[in-house]
Length: 291
Image (cartoon, rainbow, N blue to C red; front, top):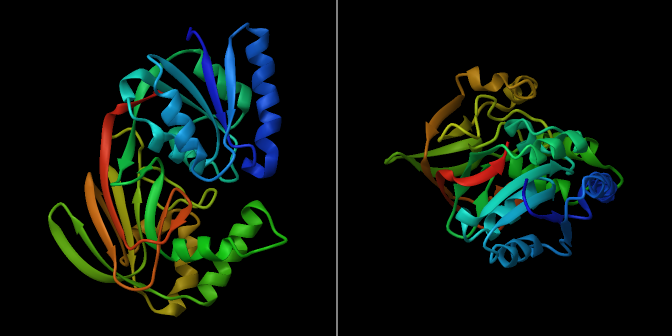
C-alpha cells in the first residue's frame, strides 16, 4: 500500500461536481486510515505547476481528479517518470480518456482500483511543449471546440452537440500537410486526429480501434467530401463507422508531423491552441499508472 497519496483536483470540472466526488474519496481514505493531501488547481496551467513541484519527491503516488484537460496538464508536468505513479478518477464533462483506458466512472470503484496497487504502463503523446494523453488534431473538431466556448445557456453534451451542428452548417475544410513515417502528403481534410484514445467530445468514437496501451497511435483523417454527404457521414461518425468509409484513412504510427496551411488551429485533449504545427511522438513504457 502506498505511504501517502497526493490528490490533484480541478474544482471546476463537471461544473463543480468534482468537489462532491472529492468528499466521497476523502471519506473512503479516512475510513481506511490512508494519509493524503489535496491540491486544488486554481487556474489554467496550474496543474502543470503542481505536478512539477510534487514530482520533486523521491516517491509520488498521485490521484488525478478531473477530465482529459486535467490529466493532460498533469502529464505535462511530470519531469521524473521513475518516481511517480498516477491514478485517475474521472470527474470531467466528457471523460474520453477514461473510456479508452477502461477506468471506471464510479468514483469508489475507480479508487478501489487505485488502492489495489496494480501498476502498469500507459502510452502518451509527446510534443515539443506539451503532452497529450487522449487525442490531438485539427479540422472540424477544433472548429467545434472554438464554437463551444461561445455557447451560453447549455451544458455538457447538449452544449457540445449544439456547437457540432452549428459547425456543420458553416462547414469549411482545412488544408494540411502531414508526414507519417517519412511520407509527406498535402490534403484538404474534414478533420485529422492523432489518437491515443478512442473518443472526443464526450463519447464521439473518432478512433474506435485505438488502444492506449499498444505502443502506437492511430492517425485518422477524413478527406474533403461533397457537403451533401456530410450528414450521412456524421451519422456513421457517431457510431464509429466512419473509419470504414472510402473518404477515411486510419494509419498506425509512432511519429507524425501535421502542419495547418490555412487559418485553422489545433487542439490537444480538448484545449484549443493558436498554433499551426503538431509534432507528435508516441511514448511507451514510461508513464506508470494504477490499472
